[in-house]
Amino acid sequence: AQSVTQPDIHITVSEGASLELRCNYSYGATPYLFWYVQSPGQGLQLLLKYFSGDTQVQGIKGFEAEFKRSQSSFNLRKPSVHWSDAAEYFCAEGRNTGGFKTIFGAGTRLFVKA
Amino acid sequence: EPEVTQTPSHQVTQMGQEVILRCVPISNHLYFYWYRQILGQKVEFLVSFYNNEISEKSEIFDDQFSVERPDGSNFTLKIRSTKLEDSAMYFCASSEGGPGGPNYGYTFGSGTRLTVV
Image (spheres, chains in turn purple, green):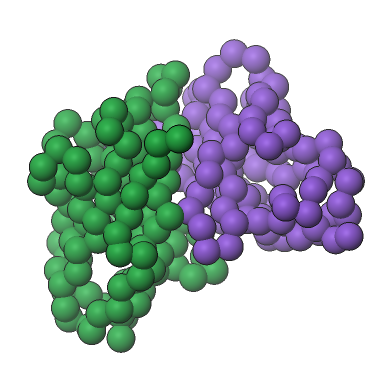
């Protein structure tokens, strides 16, 4: 079954430190992969997406991600975290199965300490 | 920047009552979706809609649920007889393109918090 795994329920990093949020997808063919961010009480905002081509993807707010087919991973990174980055981050995989849907991971909550 | 608009932001309803959640997708988008998020849990797919028909639905989307695009701008989710477990945040999303295309990627609304009492 199609699934997205985010192994870390929550992560705490210091402001200014680097960040990596892990994501593994299960679909074997070329996946459509996304990272979304959700601030408390808000909707989800698209950070970046990968469909094909360059495996390093640049997104908004200084985020980037790398697609690694050999590891079925699509990890999100940021070189230097700001306090405003504290939020819930969702990895997602889209697929055309005759219909269209996107499956979300369980999310990783990011805490930023001063 | 174009937005997906959802109304109301909060709705409280009694168990067994019908509710209609409303969404106005971005005007040039062609693909529409409803998701829900029970408090503290993951975002769950409910239904996708394209070309005036449902293209896919999840096992959650049973006969109590229906969607409609009545006038070319609104996209509604109706829950016919609400249950306590329907309490959740409901998100509408739209996408200009379909999977794999250059314009594939959701824009989400801010959600409607539905509380069933």
